[in-house]
Image (tube, rainbow, N blue to C red; front, side, top):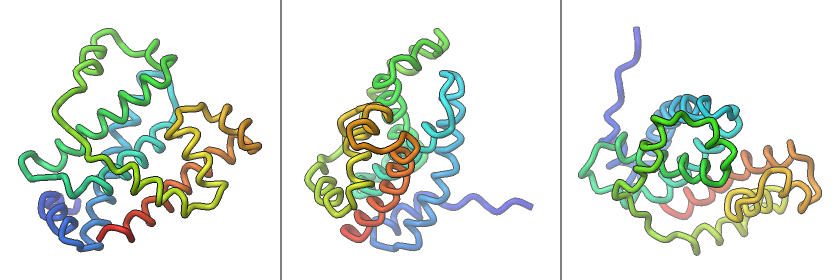
Amino acid sequence: MTSPEPDLEALMRASQSGDAAAHRALLHHLSGRLRSYFRNRLRRSGTGTDEAEDLVQDTLLVLHTKRHTYDGSSPVLAWTYGIARYKLIDYLRANARALRHVQIDEVDDLADAHDGFSAVDTARELHRALATLPRHFRLPIEYVKIEGLSIAEAAARIGMSDAAVKIGIHRGMKRLAAVLSEARP
């Protein structure tokens, strides 16, 4: 027996009103869907599950910081997949090698990325939250996620191993989400 599908719109409304439990439930449910979405799409480009998990975390961070912009005019899943699509396209653009493995009939899907989602500028809020992170979390996120360096380039610049940079990003993103969660109910 499977559990019933949660009412995502109700969870989003409660999350926007400051209900932390609803917000956690919403992100938990969406993370499973996002993980599947990214793994399926990245499998076609020959990339691994690490990249999919990074994209899941990036998307959840945007969902967390931008939930106040959701206006209910479209389903939560459509809004979520719109954000995920932008994250995927940004990743593929930044990693052009992955585009060599995209099927020709999928190129139109990737090119049709401008579906009206507009983000509110939260750079100041993000930089304040980043400043609270320890150096071994902050620098990998800044170099890889913000500046667009590869894992290897960031590792060389920081003086860490590639694995330590990946771990720093993953754990740092979790801490960053927690810091941002505390800043905005």
